[in-house]
Image (tube, rainbow, N blue to C red; front, top):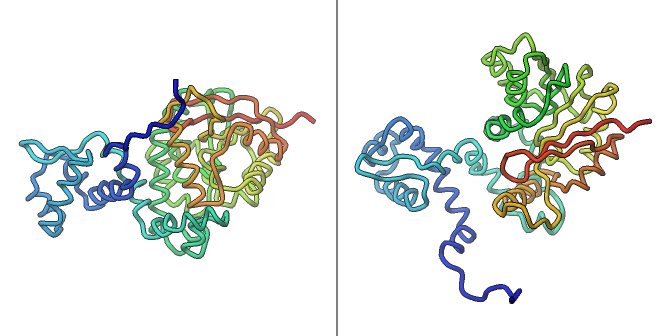
Length: 342
């Protein structure tokens, strides 16, 4: 059996997503940002109705609708345009990727690869999280996008991970509190704290109030590079460490280790890159690889292998005690660590 790469030309189905993925994304993102997806979620809409609703240039909007149907974002039948299942993936995350600051960052990926610097920093003159201080619109879109990820990941985390062992969970970098709201909602004996920066918790009180958790969950503002709140026996880090380089990640974990009680645990929810495994789902593996490049573009961080996470934990006086695959896209895991016995 030959191991050579096939030499026949790539089909359009193989070639177009690679060569024009940026265009396909912008077609879907523009359909979302114009409010078309919201409109067709209510009922099927004709082109004329969508032109009136959006106020867009009629001929240009018809061209966009045609492309969106061919791209599989919309479906057209006798009743009008309606959303396809893939359209659900367009929203806050695609809105974030369509912002000028993020597009500028992806434009300089080559320089990022050559230099090792964050492409966002190169393109915008400041690291992503510093940039939020003078770009509140991007900050809001970013946090909404992270909430969208939590909507997918939180149910699996709640179902697969045993929180009944703990009494107080601190969600470090918890943002709007979506994960902790889901965890506390499923574990009535647990209390919690959402810990994040001031711009990260702008909407957190509302999320907790809507979930009826005001009396069981507090909010603490601060920087996890300086300290984290004491009082928890489990500290959660969901999609946090992949935003930071090894030194920064060890600093975050070390600050948690300082306040971690005997018997306490740190749980990192994250993608874990495989090390040449053949049993992985190709789409999940590709998603994790793309996420790794996105971390190169957007942050100082990266996705890591299990061995690399073990080294991070060890650098902070922790040891990995369990690695549990979760039924989420992109090789997602729960990595549980405990203090190293002295």
